[in-house]
Every structure is written in structure tokens, then in C-alpha cells.
Image (cartoon, rainbow, N blue to C red):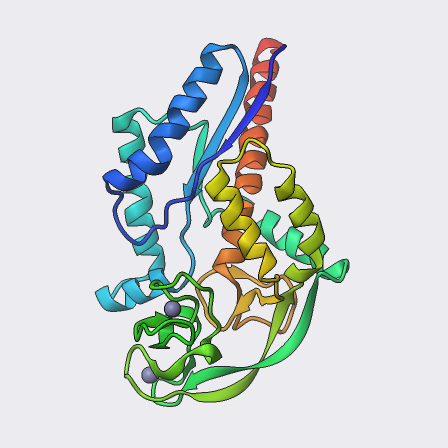
Length: 285
Ligand SMILES: [Zn+2]
Ligand SMILES: [Zn+2]
């Protein structure tokens, strides 16, 4: 029996070149797996793409005096060249900057909103008076409240791996001017991740073929309890929030990029259908 095998390979972040670790850790094993199943006669779909939104890219663009889109395109082009030269056999390697990705991600956002899994709330966020802007994610740094690292950022601490919110940071400062930010009220959308606690526990529990360390890591994370997370940001680079009145905000990169596995598969099948129908038109004159 022909099996349908879906391989969603981690989306490389478009703010730096690939190195051997990326190839050995993610892309080569996935390619071997895909080739094996194709040889067996299974129907394989292997997709991925450049993850090109978020503050690491805007920070890099500001440092180099370029537009975020130029940075994203530079690395996307390099990634494509690497796959070609290495022979990594993606069925589709796209990017999160396509109209298709934005449209499908916005559609998911609206569906979640409609079903009450996304809701609006106001929150206080760090704002730099000198730079005249909110400081989302990597725009703010400070000390980690969990470990002693003094290099934690507004979204996470690389030292202990914990996810953070900007107001968790001790002695926070603006990454650009090093000034002390003031807290200011702003409206954002939250995703009720906690509503999926039981479903996710049940799902992970049943995964008998997962490696034990992966399963344990995930279960420990779930045991700490899932929390609601803000899924929008005060910034201009990213996917628009599909609701009027939120023009100065974007959907958070970690929320939309993971939808890429789905948006990319839709894109692949749309292209396949278009190619098949143009062949059919030619055949029928
Ligand atoms: Zn830490
Ligand atoms: Zn500043």
C-alpha cells in the first residue's frame, strides 16, 4: 500500500547563512528520509521555507542600513543555492513573505478569533522614549529572572532556554540606546495556548515512536503548565493583522512561521493543480 509521507523540515531563519550544523542536523537527515520513501514508491511531500519575519531580521537590517526585505531576500537566495548545490530534494522551498502564506495565516488568525481562542487585551509594554518606539522581543535586554544570565532578551533567555516576556527582565534596557524603558499601555491579541493543555498532553502521551528525550522534554514543558501568549507585536515588519485599526502592529513571527508547514503544502498543491490544468488545456486544444 502506498503511504503518504509528509516531511516538514525546520524553516531556516533568514538572518544569517547556513552552516554545517544546519545541514547535518536538519536538512540531510530529512532528505535521506524523503529519498528512501520515494524509492519505496510512497507519496512524499517535503516542504520548508525561509522564516523571514521578527526582530532578529529588523535588528540586522538596522545595523546594516538596509530594508528587512533585502536581508530576507539575501539569505533566501543563498538557501536556495545551497539546496541546489547539495541536492536537497525539497518538493517546495518557499518563504513566509509570500502572499499565500500571509493569506492563509490571516485566515487561521481570524478563525481562532472567531472561536474565542484569540482575544484582545491591553498590556503594558516597554517603550523607549528616546527611540520613540515600543521594544518588542529582541529590542530589549536585561537579566534573566530564572538563571543568573545578564544577557537575556525580551523573548527568551539563551542561557537557560526559557521563554520570557519583556516585563520578566530585571534591569531592562533598550538594545539601541541602552536607555531605561518606560512601561506604556498597548492593545494586543492573545492566544489561549492553555486551552489546548489536555489535548496536547494526550497527543504527546500517545507518541510511542518519538525519541524518549524529545518526549520527556515536551512532557516536562507541558507539566509546567501552558500559558496564554500575546501573538501580535508593535512593529512594521511582518504579516498584517487582518482587522482594521491595528495597522501599526503585526502577527508575531513565532505564531505565523509554524503555520508555514500548512501554508506551504497548500501552495504546493495549488501549483500542481495549475500545472495539471494547463496540460489538460493544451491537450484539448
Ligand atoms: Zn535564564
Ligand atoms: Zn532606545
